[in-house]
Image (cartoon, rainbow, N blue to C red; front, side):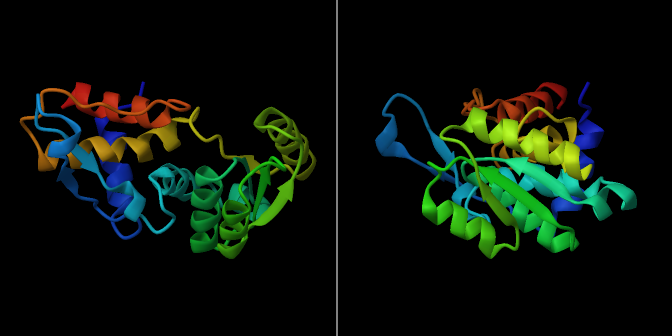
Length: 190
C-alpha cells in the first residue's frame, strides 16, 4: 500500500525539480461551483509526468542506474523520464510508436534520451521496450503501474490540499491511472 510517508518523501526529493504549480480559479467552466485547475503544464517538461519519473529514478540503486532506464510512451512520460535520467546522468532509451508526435520525440531527444520509434501503436512500442529492456537488463519505468511513480504523482495531492484545504471534491484525469492513484492515496490518508 502506498503510504503518506512515501508521498511526503517524494515531495522532499522533488522540491528542487518539480515546481509547485498554482491552482487557478476557472469561473467560466462552471457557474455551479468554484472550480480550480492545476497548472502542471508549467513543469519543465510540460506535464506532471516528471514527478513520477524523477522520483522513481531517484530510488534506483547504483547498479540499476548504471544499466540505464527504458520507457515506453507517446510523449509526456517519455519527456519526464528523459529529463529525470539526464539530471541523474544515467542513460535512457525511450520507445515511442511511429505515430508519436514529432515534437514530442524531438523534445525527448533534446533531454538526452535515445528515442527508438517502433510499431504503429503504443502496444507495439511497449512490446519493443520490453524486448530491449530484457536484452540490456535496464530498469523499465512504467508510466503508471509503479509505486514510486505513483508516489511522485501523489505529490499533487499534497499541493492541492495545501492550497485549498477546504476542497470538497478533487477531480483527477485517469489516463493510465498513476496520477489518480497517487492523488487519491494522498487525499484519503490526510
